[in-house]
Length: 331
Image (cartoon, rainbow, N blue to C red; front, side):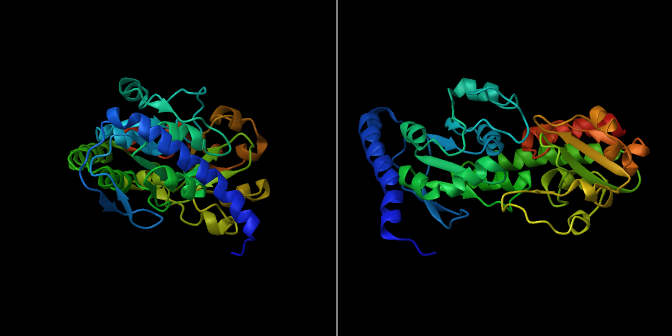
């Protein structure tokens, strides 16, 4: 990419301001930061290897979908982005899944907006920033990577790391807290085995649909976390939804596709449908009253099932809850 010099100077100015702010805050907070003097470690990141503290004590996490792992690993989180896909919350309010953990640690809510609040992040005096992953907040941290790296070592979860077990291992390696990983995964495997023994999935292919505020038809790709979980407990996924939709382009951080309403009957022709109402989206009962949806095979056969928005990109905590919901509905 070619840029002119004036544009480069304009982009450099915010970074210089952030660096100055970091220097002042660090000088003010060195005596009480609690950070370790142990040497740095090198960990993997979507932007290449990054040197991080051996025992980070002031972590800022910029994707709400990743914050729960840090609490599960007993890491110290000074600030976290509270946003989860499709889950409405008030400004400064954390998701219920880890709100109590945030309260106990005194975690601050990262202000949400169209761009990352770099001044707020710098003011937290972080010794490690974690971002990336799927969704808009994850993409924001990717876009602001250079400015964030000027504040503290910044590690980005690759967008293709979609399954919670892989995300957990990545975060555990980043913060050097591997002790809880095997226990958490073993707990899940035991619960999964029990769930599979109880769940009796409906016959036929399955599609996972997002009901969004714009009402544009949107479905998860088969490799997304929730469809993959459904496959693990015995549901048969429709692996052709992208082809049926004409392979529409999607953001790198997206695990879903959107398409024209005219293609709805072509793309969502599976006999089994899971609907995930996101913030502002219509619940299943309202979709039933829409002739466009009422004509779909799953609606005609009454094989449409609703799951909460928190199930759409499950972490360890929400995957366990989602298994309970599936067992309750399909045993």
